[in-house]
Length: 314
Image (cartoon, rainbow, N blue to C red; front, side, top):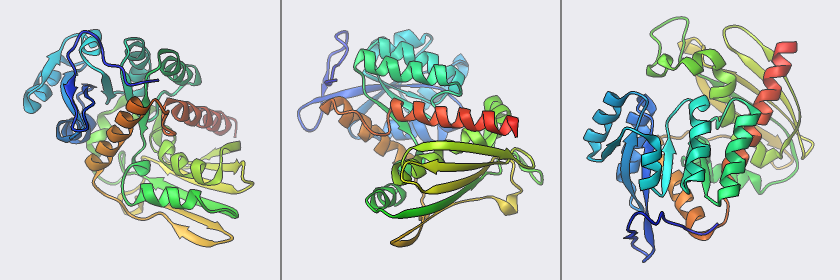
């Protein structure tokens, strides 16, 4: 896949002489306001072209704040843009991503790509069929220093085991819910689907693909995963969005022949989103698929769907 701009728009030169991507945003929720839109507006290697949302008034307001065009129809946005960024629930994102790929737009996807294997596979297949680049924004794979840490650990061998926990207080039993609590899909699908992709996005590149998975449910929406990887290592992950505030937190520890390695702290999520957009621009320019693209996103959905089945049977 080569860098291909829509013929209906005139390319704007990039600093290195190549055309700049025009990027449209789909979504108007808290994540779009706090992360996607500011990062798109600040990105030096692309142009923030416009916003579409399911709530027209919210889309108009977000577009006004950033001085970009508001679109009433997502297909019109696709026609004007070279790439699209998604800040939508997964069941809304997936079919729109297929349409965007068919329109020739590169895809900056949110996690999970979808919550069904069929929809996730449709997105990956559409990106491949239409020759567009794709990147899934998995925070730990783009934030620093976590992104560099993952690359460093992936270069080691002799792994024995790993343990991860991502305990969010989106729906805490002992206090006010977070701004993201208004998201119906998070309430329905829980921590397995919302934060599970983050844990898997680190475990897979370091320990290898998952060859076996089992899951058990605990209090609130807690799910514990037990995984076997192609390297032979075993890992566990405890996931929740309903942790008490005093119990909330994130951690991941790897143990192997070279020692014990703990995931470092990170911050600056908008900066991480900017690096995800950098990765999309690079994939679009070079035609080399990014390892964190739609195909990886589909694999994460397959693992999470299997975990969901296992938890239901336990």
